[in-house]
Length: 244
Image 1: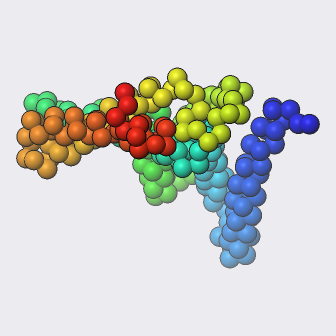
Image 2 (image 1 turned 90 degrees about the vertical axis):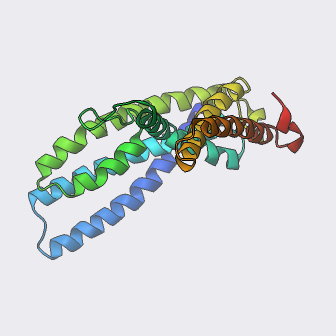
Image 3 (image 1 turned 135 degrees about the vertical axis):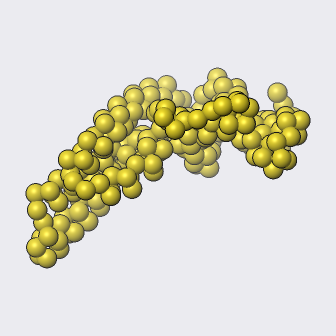
């Protein structure tokens, strides 16, 4: 017999070991090849170490987000969908709000005060990896990258705590269900439908030459369709399309 806690940490640590084994193997081989070419210096080693920690911190956020998606669902397809929602929800929300501000405010600019996601490691990673790559010194890279690494580690710890709580609360009967916790269904539906409607409304407004009436119609239809699709996913039954 294996306790739930021991089973959780065995599976969890296996995932990290797999990542570290592959990453460190490639890193060591690359460093040996570079050393053989006489290109290794203290600055290069500092950059290698920073890059390793940068990617490891980001991996932990992605890893914990995926586990959280699995804990909240009971089906592999729905788990992948949930991971996608968790990954892009905040960046897309900020993008929608920014788009509507440009559309409806007489004056709006985010040049001096950037309007960017605060908690999305995904947005941070894709927005700043190339910036780090082209900085000239390891000190500049550390000054730019370490604050994000610290933020990601805090975010990864927060996600891990949520994952661990969900793991102990999750009933074994949740396997096969779309959502493991029934009380989350309406909450997730509202969050997803509101953002999906905003995205569609923004697209329709741009396509219809800033027609606000068509934008509202597009948002309404998108909300209805999204609700219907979510009910079908929740129950795995087309007959549930008109529920709630």
